[in-house]
Image 1 (cartoon, one colour):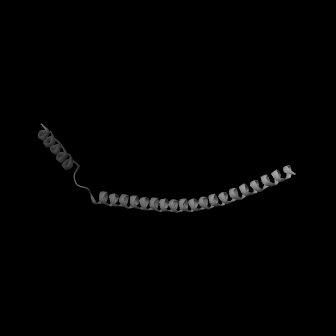
Image 2 (image 1 turned 90 degrees about the vertical axis):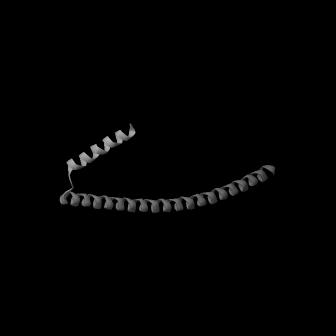
Image 3 (image 1 turned 60 degrees about the vertical axis):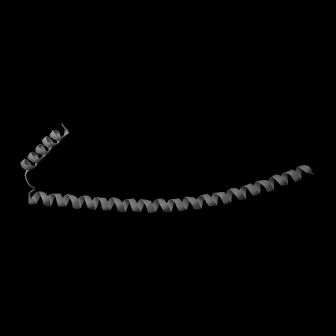
Length: 94
């Protein structure tokens, strides 16, 4: 059964191919133009993606630097708070 279905399908495909005929030179030229346009679009998309990747990397570096600065500032604030607390304890003890 599978073989007969496959044979019928092949016959239909062959008939359809013969009915549509061969591609003309104009059709081939149009197809080549479409392919070229698609390639240009793909190249443009790749360039945009690379640019976005570079921008993301730069943003990540800046965020990392900002996080480091924030950590240093937090550490400094914690030290100051401890000093203030010790000063307060000393003054209350007197």
